[in-house]
Image 1: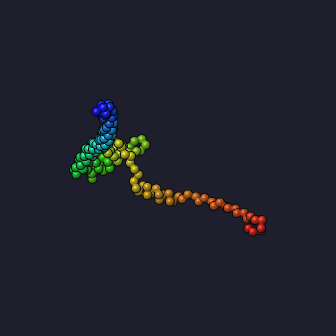
Image 2 (image 1 turned 30 degrees about the horizontal axis):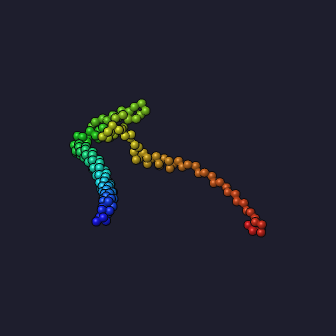
Image 3 (image 1 turned 90 degrees about the vertical axis):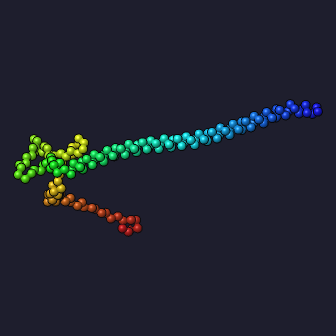
Length: 168
């Protein structure tokens, strides 16, 4: 009976230390599990936000392209109209209807003003007229008639050397 009284103070202290150790182990395990879950959810959220941004930019690009398609279809529809084609031929190419007298207005340097001098695209950019293919061809024919003078060949001097044993 006395042994029961002596064993009693040692028993509760041992139980308290086991309870504290298991609580610490459980807490560490819980923190590790929560940390792993947080990392996995964070990477998933990062991927989700990146994909939603990509979807939004793709939708914006699609709407811009649809607007461009609608604009091009409108231009295509205008080219189906014979009056529009005639007007463009007069403005861009300087064409005239048979029986009319065509005039070309030039500036002080002799450059044409108006039809043929500029072709306007959908924006306000003005394209400079390029030389016609036949002008480039004729320029190459003229260049072929006037070949560049041939360069004189340089004389090379070779020297013969003898070695110590008498061979060349």
